[in-house]
Image (cartoon, rainbow, N blue to C red; front, side, top):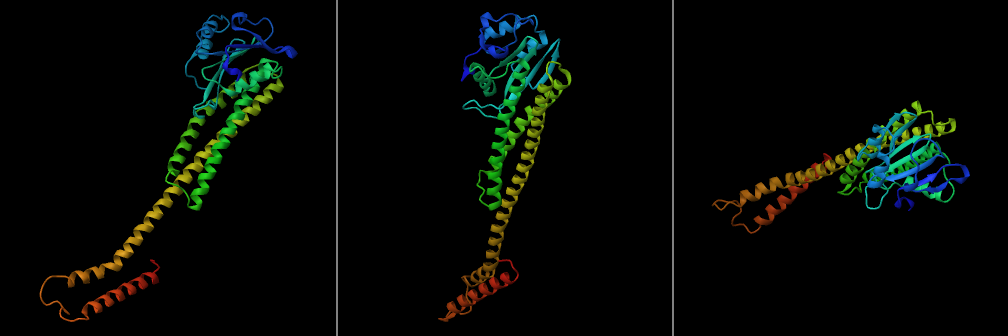
Length: 323
């Protein structure tokens, strides 16, 4: 995957766009020359030093680009702006809801992006540029990056909905396992984690559309589409959260009903055998004068009477619809 080798640079100039910039040869970020895209790994000391050495990047922007943890936000500065976006974590062995941040600076010089962990959206754009395709201007690259972030997030949310559909189906048919509660809890945690990043991301994109003049009408419309997609994602996450709460309550009610049914059955059985236990306990006392002590058929008569009492009680419970 191209995103393995960074820092990387690409010139964005019409049909000549493609990989053409090395970090050592990258010109100062000052607004002249053809527009370009530079992509950095913030774990690279050389990349951090290059960013700190750019006078066109004011201190708040440099701090935002180099900070270890940032939430989605929009920061205007001079003729450009800094923007932080987040995408689902599709790296092997990592949790998708542990979202990856990409820090962006864009002005008339081009676009600069920074990350600490690999992001598939960035890698996809790099593949296109290295194939001689992809965006030809910095605003086009920004809009396409937002589109890929939204696309992969949408796929992840669709996966959450499918997981919830299976849980709801199992719960409604009574085939829910003991792990259903844990699955619902995990689903709600993932939903909350993703929503925690997407909510401020929508605010950041709204602020971008209100303030920047670097996007033309077509690019602005495309960014509005991504804003609408973010709103749908948040609505879907809210619905998943509400559905998971309902599924959890339904599962709890089912378990309580099953437990009550078992306890009720035990109570009915105990009620049937209670008088029989009393009779057998009374006749089992080791004292003189027990009725039928010397009669051969006394045992069988008491056994038959006990069975008759049990049958009568069972029929009575059945008539009362307790059985």
